Length: 505
Image (cartoon, rainbow, N blue to C red; front, side, top):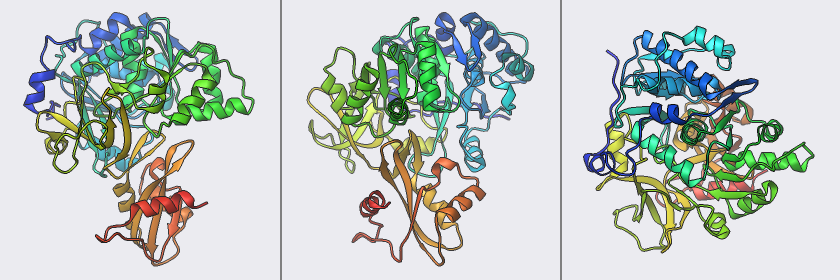
């Protein structure tokens, strides 16, 4: 029997933010998007809101005809495309749970992710079907299920996203209809987005940023969503001009690449851009200033995670230096707290500590209740694992991480997962993976190894490929040492290794 996914959230928070009657009491996702909708553009394919509705209805019918029912999950693995948006909406129309898998995941990650949820249906779509409405209908279509027919309840799980977090064990992050609908509605309002706007979305829709800004916010705002399958800065610039893109969201990687292309003479018309929202990697004041000059628009820093999407940002009314120098402040109903990482005791304003978050957009737990319990503190606070300061006016600065996570181009990479793959090699005795700063990607992965025989970058790439590990997790520097530097505790001195990785050429 297929598992129905249910929230694993602690009851205290359920009573606070999951109950009806608050500002977060908004329609379920199908009703929200169907009421507003927006044009979807995927390459040469362009769907009007009415055409998109018809396609969603038919694909929803196809899923229902395959026996999928309320609370059961449907999983697929495709890049950004018409299919990725339509499949999510089709799931919500029949009360099913959308469970997309990142298209860059290798076989190991895919299996580990899906093992967490036992999907009722795994869709394998041929590449030629994902941007062709007729082909998608032929592959998945069925008797149409019209809008307003969703049996979903606001507290039902609507979405599963997979993140490895700070360990190599896949975590299935559960989000409810109420949480996602509230977040989409709120961010459309915070960013001042409406039917006259258009977003360019290169971030994958198996990622919270891609799904939120490519499907949910456009659905709430009634704006056009232009999907990018594979990011290329020159093609992105061309799309900005052709589609009159007004809103850009993503990690700094996207904007740095586009700025470089412009500096090298790539044709560009970015006069339509009025807002850039960037997070997911190291966003510096210098990046904000330069991006604001290049695009001649408002640039916002944001902070969030798969579990707690976009919980801080700034508004158009805030001073530019706040948007430049901080990661924003809490939006909507979000509450923030800086706590001692060991005791959990609150710390004074301006003092660094672990950032704790709670609010109606929070995830509803992991599929594994034990994993949920490990990150939820008394009172329903989510322990982010990030070190931050919050000043007396509520402005947040993220200053570090408690977790050994490397963030490369907006993707979380578990250092321990990389190390486990390295140490599985027959010649490697000990390995430590660290991130080193990179102007384009935010961070890249460096591996330090003690090995019985020469172990270089070429052998590392071959080994990771043979094990089915995603390319973005594969180290981009390999440094062989006779002995790894250690702290007095006997643990590897990661700070020293980060310094060496940054200094090496």
